[in-house]
Length: 189
Image (cartoon, rainbow, N blue to C red; front, top):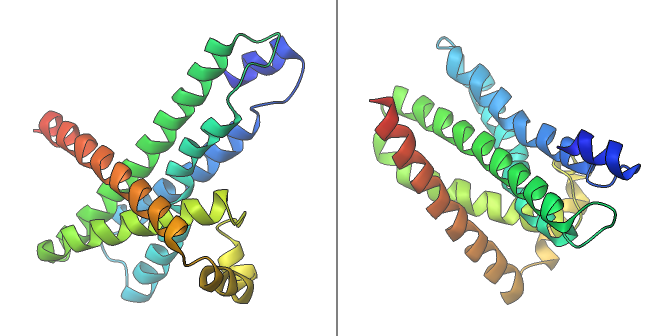
């Protein structure tokens, strides 16, 4: 749909969705490698999980791309709406499958009691990561390239507005993930 839009409109607008979907797929790539490697040592596992969590907010970040949605002739508004919503669904699916795989890694290590706290931490981390991307304009790799700048921004961003966004976004992704997991488990039996 993005390519068809580019060809029809003669511009690259919404081309950024392809990049955002690529970034949304990175956590799935990481979790898939960790999940398939059953003989992984702890250093590689924890390093992989760190990278996974660092890139995971890119999956639900696409929800915030709805801010770019308004009528841009000659493309009909309905087309752009469906394009963005399809991208949101794909981003969420990539992220949710990835979270499920990491949960299976935790289950594999006999730590079932940690799944709910893990899920809560992941959702809050994703919510704050999306906030950092959309409002503070950081990318995932900034935590590695500019950690001091990122830490300063985190310190300066602690207020009620940030907390409201993070808690609401985390709650919504938690509900969506729970729905996704219910469907996934029902059809995998």
